[in-house]
Amino acid sequence: MAEHRSRWRTSGARRLRLSCALVAFLSFVAAGPFVLAEGIVFHVANRCPFPVWPASAPNTGHPVLAGGGFLVPPGKSRRVVAPATWNGRFWARTGCNFTANGAAAACLTGDCEGRLACNGSVGAPPATLVEVSMHEDPGKGSSYDVSLVDGYNLPVSVSATGAADPSRCAIAGCARDVNAACPPELQVTAGSGGAKVAVVACKSACLAFGLDAFCCRGAYATPAACRGSVYSRLFKDACPAYYSYAYDTTAATASGCRAREYVITFCPGKWGGELDGAAAAQI
Image (cartoon, rainbow, N blue to C red; front, top):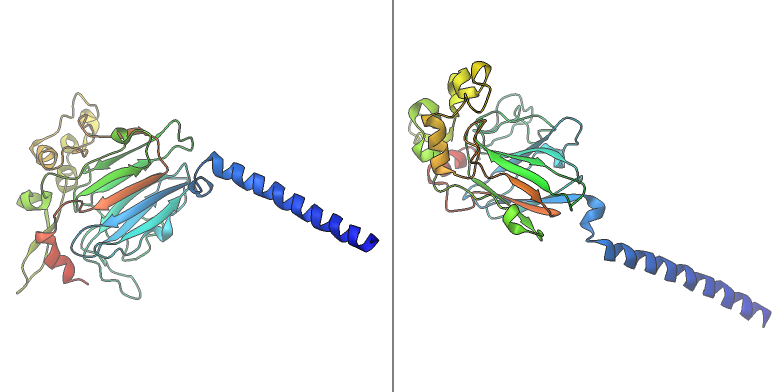
């Protein structure tokens, strides 16, 4: 009988510990979704008719995400977990062909020293940039924008999943392909010989000419002095929601977005006619 009571006390104590653990677990679940323990999640989607190699680079003091670069085939997406306070940029690389030593440029656009995993390196312009600044407190919201200040290679949209106010979180893609309207002096092309020459990216005027008036530097380093150009208007007409130059006050910055999961979609509409052949040739 004494042995039976001892076993009962032991099993009772075990049940009590399990009950306490269950209560703690349920309290954690009630506090919020599991993603809170991980931080925030970026779903990086590719709707282009060709592969893209998305990449990211952190701002100073923030970690590299998912090695800084990876492949996403057409119609697929990649889940990337980040700290709740992560700040940095995303962009897409196109037409990549990685070699073992990675010594030469491997991608037609957005290349980062010939490597698949950028490991914090910033991609070579021109490339469309998604710039993000996350806030640890979802009640205060995070912010992000899409920038063509360094030029354009692909259209991209950004949205949030489960946002408290979705209208504060959406940045639309482009109305039309910038590469198709890019003037010769801004074009980045690929293809030679018998291959069709395709425009794979479009430089910003700052990148192409390096003038203070285009780069909003020197005497033009204020919003009043730097008012854009015929080139930035070309970007703005095609992609109204993006920053077309440094002091573009009409860009759609998603500010105060309260969410824990975000979707970055490359080629959110029907795109890729000009780029498809050039990119496919590099695969």
